[in-house]
Image 1 (cartoon, rainbow, N blue to C red):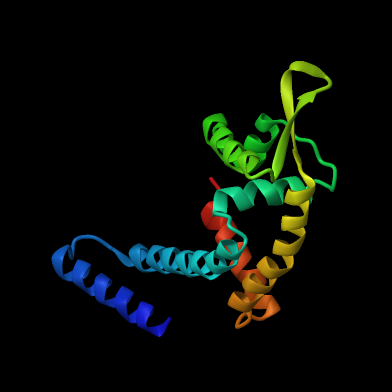
Image 2: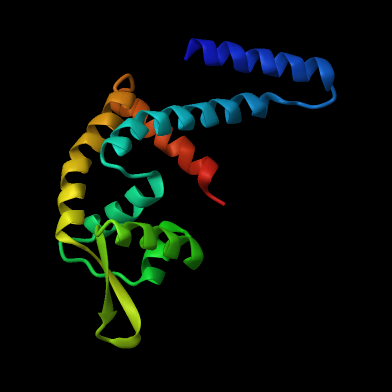
Length: 162
């Protein structure tokens, strides 16, 4: 990570040379956030590959699982929860349905609607994946104390809020 900091410092120095009229310090912070995000994604990819999943698929499966063993959510409920368009949700669901990890069932309250549920295969996959996922995330954050994690969360929430 020290190399990343040096690289970011170098980039910042170049911008200061080329555009001294601009305060480009924000690039250092944003660059560090992007690089940290990339490292976190890379650190989780190996685990996802082991289960034959990608990030979008994992997101759907974890959303269903965290809503309860027998959760049945409409695609629009899931899209809103995951901040996705309906088109993006449909593509994710199609892919998981082909693998028999989820099932579309008629919505008993709306003849035109469907509810999405985990199949037994999908549930078993998520149950195996989650401990490995948590362990991978924990390993990447191991250098941070509890108070550092809390501070980081507060700062990231400030950046992420509108």
